[in-house]
Amino acid sequence: MMKLILIRLLLLALLFCSASHAEERILNFHSILELRSDGSMLVEERILVQAEGIKIKRGIYRDFPTTYRDKLGNRVTIGFELLSVSRDGRSEPYHTERRDNGIRIYAGQEQVFLNRGHYEYTFRYLTNRHLGFFADHDELYWNVTGNGWDFPIARASTQVRLPGRSLDGAIGLEAYTGSQGSQGREYRTEIKGEAFWFFTTAPLGRHQGLTIVVAWPKGLIAEPDLAQRLSWLLQENSSVLIALGGVALLLVYYVIAWLRVGRDPEPGVVIPEYQPPEGYSPAALRFISRMGYDNQAFSAALVNMAVKGYLRIEEDNEGSFTLIKTGEMPRLAAGEGAIASALFGAGSSRIALQQHNHQQIGNAVKVHKRALKRDYEKTYFVTNSIYLLPGILLTIAVCLTALLALPDNGQKSMTGFMLVWLSFWSVGVFALLSAARSAWRGALSTGAGYLPAIGISLFSLPFLGGEVFGLYALFSQGSPLLAGVLLLLVAVNIFFYQWMKAPTHKGRTLLDRTAGFNLYLSVAEKDELNFRHPPEKTAELFERYLPFAIALGVEQRWAERFTNVLRRAGHGDSHYSPDWYHGRSWNHSDPAGFGCAMGSAMSAAIASSSSAPGSSSGSGGGGSSGGGGGGGGGGGW
Image (cartoon, rainbow, N blue to C red; front, side, top):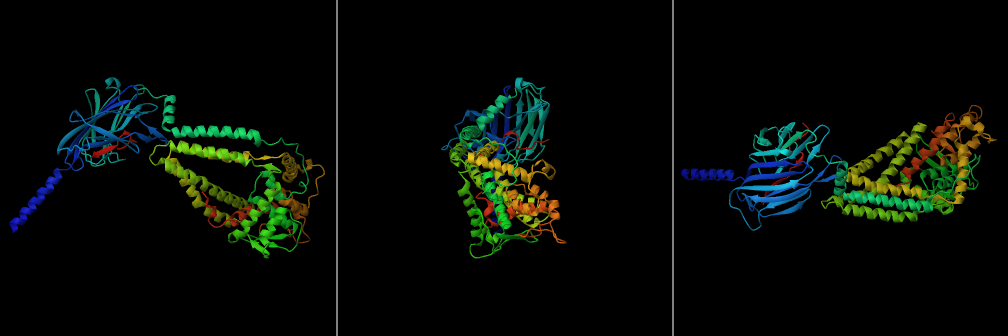
């Protein structure tokens, strides 16, 4: 019994030894690199393998990368022409297969299986664009074996021949061994015959390789000129060329459209006016001046309603605003009446500008905007938005064509998805950042309201992070140059969305008068003497025109002119303060801060309170083994 057990153990040991000896591997990997004066390179690879029918059944395959990324991330395609494939000195049938970043060469036939044994495969090919041209030298940085082999490599070597078989041209010979990125130095060099030789001094494991660097003085090999480099760049990035053509075509279209309908009428002479144009509310003047609506128009309307006595504004120590209906019924502008109905129509008499009231406040903003558009758009200005439609369609067509020109390796779908996603996401991020900017502007100018500013800033950070990630993904998946040009296409549409707007002749006349009134509101106190018979500065005048100053963006300058007036406006020991406002932002000795609070701080509060939570997210020795050209790997099939 004991004897039988020993026999079985011996047979098992022999089986393990047999399996060990049956390991498939590369016994020798030798390549010959012949550099030519035009920068091309003839390569011959001799690969001696031990086949055991495990992975090497029909033959071996060799992967060769032909697509790289340059330092800027642009696509670079190197030339590759397969000249011959042989096995043991005889021509061998082969077929090729395109891969994501190159070509795979299968040596052998589908129906022909190899016997166990040693076979030497030889691949000969012509390639180019592997040389580096630097200020004081040129070099070949070449991955001899590739780091993608399924088999260990017992020995690896290469010989490099410079043009003219010169042996005194090289000024540097280096090599690296090991896994991808490692800087192993298990090699030696020789100058033998007409070539520089590199040999590994230790076996290479699976997915390890040999990379060499040969440097020589400039002038030995012709360097590509700028025209050649540009030609390569455009050939390899045809999608960029398509996108650039699209930008040019889009600009031509928009310039022609702008010349036809977008040019403003010539402005008239602007003279200072001491009162606003009659019949126009502060929000109306802002809407017409900007040819569009924003939260500042809503702020100006609320302050104007307060000055008239319809409501009172209260601000707590945290910088939050509450609107309280007074019960008085002054005459309101049409847009202001729409706000009053939306905010207090259900019988309520107060509302806080807080996010839990977003539905009510958001509705008030919508009806106010609708009222202003109904009363003033087309009469005082035209948006010419119909002319944007061909531009948008052209942009979509160019983007799709450029994406279709990308190589079919996943870049098309990923780049397309990121472009569409970013287009919507960026709108939300821009709105959030604008609200944060307004909040900080108000906080810094008044010394209050820091908590809401910090809150909206912190809320914006994740969405800003998503924007940065999206841009990184867009630039890394496709060509950064292509991503930049596609973003430029979007920017052109946004730019001309504003430029295509134009005032009518009636609107131009009103804008001239508004500019005259703005001149009066914004002039510095020291320059007031240049005015002829300006109205007397009183607290009542300050309050009456403050909504207009907010609407025209000059509330701080307007308030600064009344510092001394408001200091003297109190009665006895009491200081002056507006009847329609109560809160921390009022300081009789610093009315400028109050003006900013009523402008930017309230606009920020409106922005954050008129949107549902979450809705603002948008609808939108430097070398190493494995480096350099060449490389790839292989296996058996």
